[in-house]
Image (cartoon, rainbow, N blue to C red; front, side, top):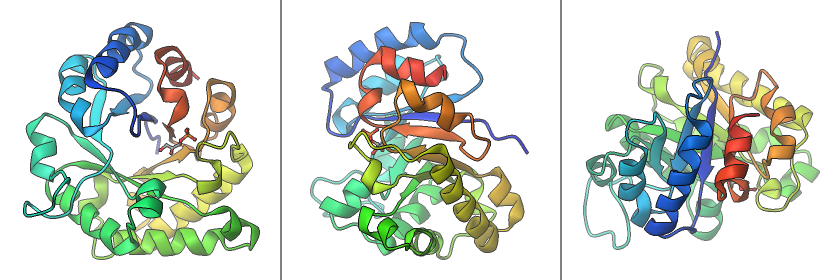
Amino acid sequence: MSRKALIAANWKMYKTPAEALAFVDAFLPLIAGHTRDEIALFPSVTSLATVVKAVEGSGVIAGLQNMHFAEDGAYTGETSAAMLKAVGATHTLIGHSERRQYFNETDEIVNKKLHTALKHGIVPVVCIGELLHEREAGHTAQVLLTQLKGALAGISAAAAHTLVIAYEPVWAIGTGKTATPEMAVEAHMIIRAELANILGSHVAKATRILYGGSVKPENATALLGEEEIDGALVGGASLKPDSFAAIVHY
Ligand code: 13P
């Protein structure tokens, strides 16, 4: 089964709406007519509506970096699924390591968010990955399995058909240290095998597993050339139109 790659930009806490618009204006001509891969932008919440409008008709996807699991309520500073959809966005990241690290997001919270996203027809990109000391202790597989099982608790195969997983080794995020293609492939195979255990082999074969962690134009070809790597979640190198376009054209 061939999976269409998804090349996604996670802008984190960068870019005002004006800066996001300038990016899209410069970026769209660079990827015009590119149909091999899906392309997604995950701007900050204040730039989301601007980006949705700016990419209209281009085929580029816009999504949120984080979404609350509740339908609504007294959750100061949070954004709901309905709010995401109301501005025309279609995707959300869930459980990024920075959310886990700085905002105490647990596997249980990730699981609740995933249930909410799927219920609302929002495409979820669930991020998992090991810390450096976990890799060095030989615990990578165990960490990935725990995070994956936690995220997918109570999710049916039928509900999971839009699921995307992003493997982001925490030690490779923003550090300039990239997993080698071999390391990424090994992790992706562990993830896919567990997806088959939990959701069945049909879903496991169809689910895209992205790699994230210091993806740059210089290493994109080697990583994305691997059959097991179904796209990239790009931080720093997605902030400039030319470098993100170069990754899209790997
Ligand atoms: P960098 O590409 O800056 O390492 O960030 C990766 C990431 O966290 C994407 O979600």
